[in-house]
Image (tube, rainbow, N blue to C red; front, side):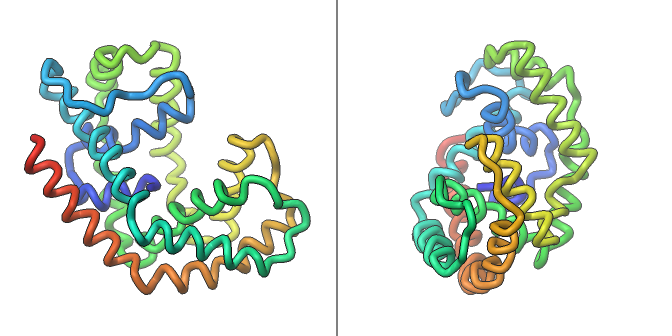
Length: 231
């Protein structure tokens, strides 16, 4: 799932360390494919580092539940079906990957439209990270200092520029999708294909509106059960 959805299904935690932990697996993966934060409890961590790590574990569990859900399978297939009617100029490779990323971005867009205060609280809570506590956690995880610094810089830019708010604009959302596509595949989406993607959002969003709230309800419940039995 994308950033805001991770925050929402974790029941909008007010602790900054926990909230940042929800994002850390994606922030680290963006910087290096050679390192992955551990997906297991680590009892020896300090209290503040435990909060970071609980957010990390919640991220992994939420992604697992989401990717196993009927919602994910149904709407990933729907996006690909909608795109069969599009007259793409160049966009022929990695469309499965692109559909996956777009589905997650669209969920954040729906949250922004229907629950705008969630995003406001998300950024407010996230802005309170103490770097010394972050450094203690990533040091305990044995993340290299260079990668850790890049991750924290990305965090600062994320707070400053508030990228998620741009999802409310369809053109900016597709530009964000192109950024991810280009970074991962080293390919670029042409202007004509961006226009086709923007047009397709109407049908994709309409289909998702019917059952995305049930998805969130189910994920919240399952995560609540997971943490009651594991922490």
